[in-house]
Length: 389
Image 1: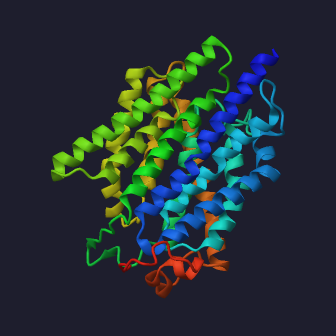
Image 2: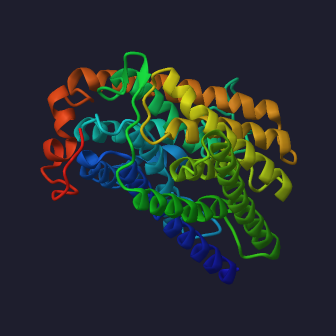
């Protein structure tokens, strides 16, 4: 009994550590994709999110989500740390998509609401105490292993609300044309994407919750294999599509395709076969490829492609678990997507709208042209380089 408790506690702590690798993962990915004049601001915001979201979740978010600190098969402290590792990801998803024009303080305020109210309530209804039990809105039967909807879609719905409020970057859409802002540091993009990829093994594998029996260890292994394969095939599909279209290999799109596959498999990695995981990941990669220009046509400016990766594939992954997953109800999956989507988008929009009225989310035009590194942080990431407008 004690041996299993110790092994599972160690497993959860190891998974927690892997998930925390996603903090520098998001930071490096976003820092590489934005222009040089906004890199320090992006890094500062990612650091702020980890600090603020984690503390808010410690003080009251975790209790709201799970109704207390009870944990039977592992240390209650390990159980908390594992869940805490997830909370900041919802805001990381949002912050990347509104980068290069959003200020630090209003994002910090929204982080408090996301970590202390929006995300804990979604968790409560799905993985946690379930205050909606017995009501028409009860979505606890939705199968979402590690959060295709609970985490990825929740953060992405908040991002969509934020983009609709603050609008695109200056000059992004002009005279009917879409201006492409090239990534400032491709090595950082690659490093960030692979840190996220590695973190996903803890994200999905750790969500199994136990590894101390033969059956549990086999499930964890299946989940990690399905996770990795979905990322591999998602990247491959985009690599092929990009080359067929442009006769070039765009590493930023290839990596986003891989991340799309990873998001898509997150809901059902424990209930689908390896072949199904490949199909889910392949479709996830293709969705990213087509969603990126789709959002641009709608003039929804998302510098890192977060909506294409996290919203589109959060929805697809949750549906896919219902299509391919063993003993998973497709109807329950769709109901969960709708309930979480309506709540996350509506609540985020209202909160962001109010914050924006009090403390503008967006930097003014002069500051945006100057770059948020100087204005918000007083520290440039590349002071010796000539910065492009």
